[in-house]
Image (cartoon, rainbow, N blue to C red; front, side):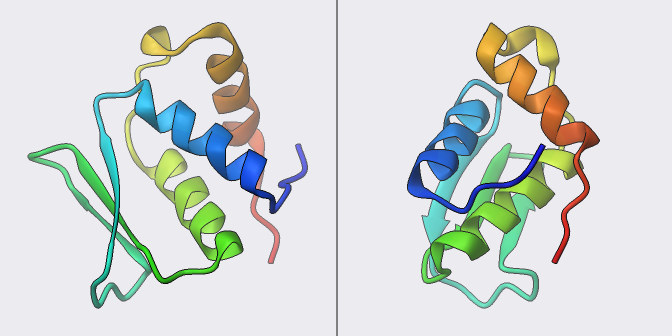
Length: 91
């Protein structure tokens, strides 16, 4: 699957995370990687000053890092998740 750096693709990633137990927030902060995960509270924080491609790259990293229950996802998001799990990010 090729990664498309568009607002529509960013919305798809946000929609996928919305169906999980995690809460996605865009906040300002000094994150070394541009994002952080508060595992105990199941909160994902992404630097809100990142450009769209930076936000997409962060969400792709996060989706591969966190443990997502595929049974909670809708059919379209499950398909997207499985495609993303097999995709390597090329910079």
